[in-house]
Amino acid sequence: MRLAVREALLAFRRSPLLSALGVTTIAFSLFAFGLFSLVALNIRNALRTVEERVEVRAFLVDHTPVDSIAALMEELGRRPDVQRVEYIDPEQALARAREELGEFKDVFEAGFLPGSIDIRMREGYRDPAAVQALADVVRRLPFVEEVRYGADWIEKLHRIRNVAAATGIILGVAFAAVAIIIISASIRMTVLARAKEISIMRLVGATDAFVRRPFLLDGFVKGVLGGLLALALTWGANAIVSRSFLQTEFFPPGLAILGIAAGALLGTLVSAFSVRRHLGRLT
Image (cartoon, rainbow, N blue to C red):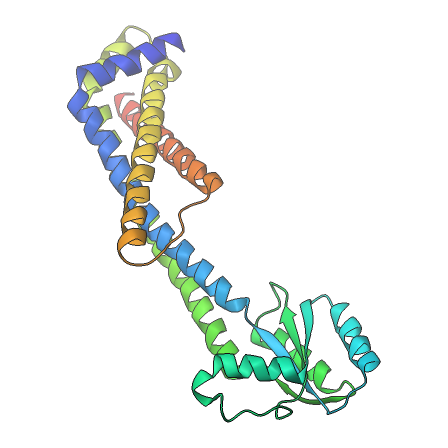
């Protein structure tokens, strides 16, 4: 292993421009993929924030007893698809209506709006079918006069989420494939540049494993450096967008480390494939 490390360092020293080209190619390939992933992450977070507002609102008949309201809330709170149950009395409903519809605040009068129970759905139960099922259950409960949950809005939100997920998968695979092709070509250039050295090593009796080891280490180091550079470029782009246009979220630490590890793994695997292919031609 010590000899492999020395050979990898010598390769960087002998051909710094080629090594820099390899690192830069990996970095920009991962940078393009990282930008797309960052956009996909922020779209997913935005949709999740909107989905958190999915709720079923049950309007109660006038003068519903307090103990009956408490019993209804307790029954609904035990359901696995319910995250939170909140009672809105007529005064609170009036204040909220005046706040949300300020231009029509003079229209609302005390006692005009009924009390209601607002039911927030748990994550994983916010699709149209789950919300419809809960609304049907709530509609049959005693003292419930009317149920509203914005069926058209939930349908559109669910459709947007599905389209965004499908588009993200397709484009993600496409970006990953392009990155692999570009990185493969870059590392293959390094292997071909040292083809004479590989042939000499084979002639003096070096095993295939011994020949591969410096190239694998070289690919690993380039992958790590490329991943770090790509992460820095992505962070810079995210900072510029957040400062100049709109606030966006960056990758969490675990995902950032995973991206660097992916660059290292990609560099190692592509190096292994390129060296194996070249050694196969020499046999």
